[in-house]
Image (cartoon, rainbow, N blue to C red):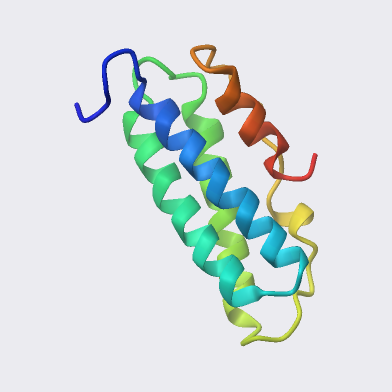
Length: 118
């Protein structure tokens, strides 16, 4: 598809989601809910694309990506429900680190594995 030669589309989206997620977590921890929501929404979009591209090459990671996307969506909902008030649930309680089996890029697994502060 749109992925370049030698580039796995799923892994590309996982890496992009991880970058956005890490930025969101930093903003979240700093109390910038609006900024965190924007980054988490970017992360969620990239995770949705990764999920769509996961089969069949990354079948073992598909359910992990689905679960992680659900965690990000839960965090977005929590922050939005507060209407600018400080978060009442620590980010680490909602977004957990995920270990992926994809081997084509150790950077993808390392990036997502560290995302939840784990």
